[in-house]
Amino acid sequence: MNLRRILFTFGTRLGAALLNFGLVWLTARWLGAAGRGEVSLFAIDRTLLLLFAGLVGGSSLIYLAPRRNLWHLLLPAYGWSVLVSAVGTTVVWWWRQPPAAYAAYLGAASLAEGLVLVHVQLLLGRRRERLYNAVGLLQSLGVALGLAAAFFALRWQSAPAYYTAHILTYLVLWVLTGRVLWQQPDRPRGHRRRWRYVARELARHSRSAHFSNLVSFANYRLGFYFVAAWVGTGAVGVLSVGVALAEAIWLIPRSISQVQYVDTIYSANVAAPVQATVRAVRLSAVLSALAVLVLALVPAHWLAAVFGRDFAGAQRIVWALALGVVAFSMHMQLSAFFAGTARYRTNNTAAVLGLVLTLGACSVLIPRYGAVGAAWAATVSYLGSTLWLAWRFVRAAGISPTELLPRPADAALLAQRLRR
Image (tube, rainbow, N blue to C red; front, top):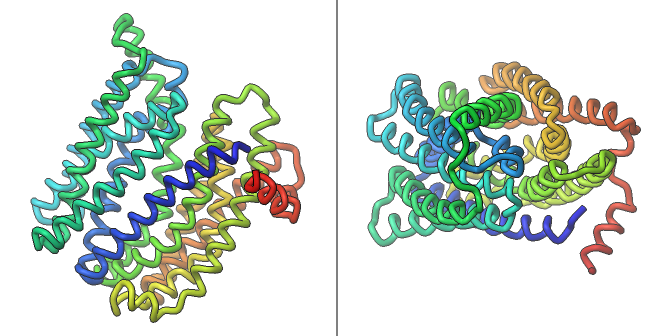
């Protein structure tokens, strides 16, 4: 396990997480629970469109970038992003009936972010990890600065100020990442038949690799839509703050899984990814459990003092999510192994299982417990899908399930490498 790369990735993700925490604080403190709920629903709608854009692109761009001409991958991914932004925005407008201005903001934001995502995934596939991490940091910094300027300099304290800051930030990043992409040695060339072949290959890989991402998104955020419909936008705001606090812990396992995924793709040794995944699962479980424990002990009145009195209930959200957050930190490492070895069906099955559990738990728990019920439903989903992936992994690797459980030697090894 390359601890130096993991620590660098973690450092940049930590910076982005702190900035995102600032965004949560700004929108919660100055817009209240209802305004925070509007911002959260915008973020969920935008993410949903980006996931559909990933059906021709997504993580498959990372997988194919070392193997194909970047231009053969770039153009079909671009075209699909434009199509999804236009059609997806229309569908969201028809489905949720938001104001026309909201739909315009959503279309522009999803397109700008989708094009930047295509750039950075291609560059990550060419092992430009530092740039990939830097873009994640810069987008959070840009939105935070833009929102602060709108709130305090322009006195524009409303949800559209957040939408505008997001769009402008990604337009700048599109230009910057586009310049770096142009510096790659690839140039547009090849017979038309070759371009069509690579486009079909990209779509085929993306459908298999990205299906689990779409279903996982439903596991993450379907509860928000149910809470908005059955409880109200204010409850969505409280739920979003609790979820943001709990899921901030995932920057640890995400940093590990990003490095593991890239290494698995490039690994020529069949046994090496298995050994690295076992270590990553143990490390993620220990670090995430410690972080969750610290967060769960934060008093409710502290949260009310920081975010506003509407958000004291966010502590109960954190407690309901605690076990699920730890379980899913292990899920990320197992999922990276199966994606890196192109065994997408296993990830897809785990995602579908999680979705079934989400739907059942949401229908039972949200009407009775509101936003806290949505958090419990997420925990049920995370536990079920993680157990499935762990079972499949130990069968594929030919190891005992106890190999995935943390042990004292792991802590000693981590301490030794940190001292180095």
